Image (cartoon, rainbow, N blue to C red; front, side):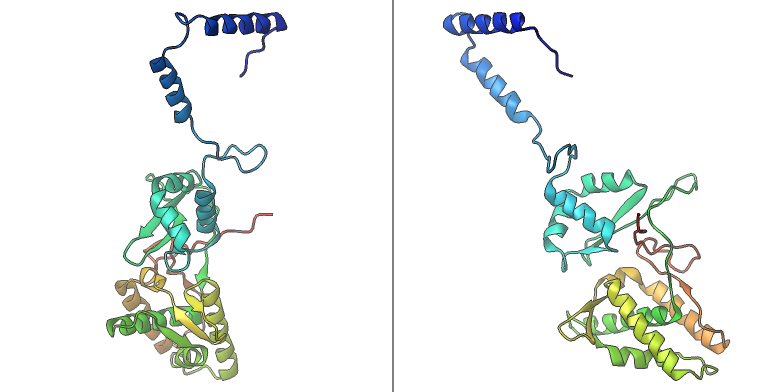
Length: 271
């Protein structure tokens, strides 16, 4: 709050100021002046980007925070500038997410970062901006296949692992239950699953619309123990003749991916 002064007081202050400047013995010495300059330099810089902006983040930090909220993950490969900002401002950005009951997970080995719902120590459920997402049966099969392919190619020294849509659809068909006779419908579901994982950026688009690069995030999405459990689950489902089902998402929000209620984080639309 700024104090308001009368005109008379302002005039008196101006006169006092002139008198002080005219008198060397009452003026500020060099050390005092340096102290004031240092105090001015220590004042926090304004991060205002628009009228009424009271935010405390730089434009780079804000862009990175928006990416974290908007996308399922941020990676060094896809967003190198934001990745550097994330590492430089990790505590600050984590604090902003924590204010919304979200937590920040950073995997330095695979250079990916993502948000996930915070869990109360008392087991209480926090308000959430995220919603539960379940993978379809075809998407789950694809995740297993992609994880196996990625690990195999990386073991052979390949840094970039590419896959084709037709090959993926064909491989999903190998998991088709014996009772399923709708081959066209199954192929359509498998192709839709490819599109879904591309939208989630598990599959990265290339110049060829039917050719994709497998993102390293698959390693975080499906660690080896989860991969084995999912593969076993799919085999059991086929053996039992179970109909196509949705599978709890082995999501980025929770590494306990096979347990019901796990989350794959994606923002709800806010109207």
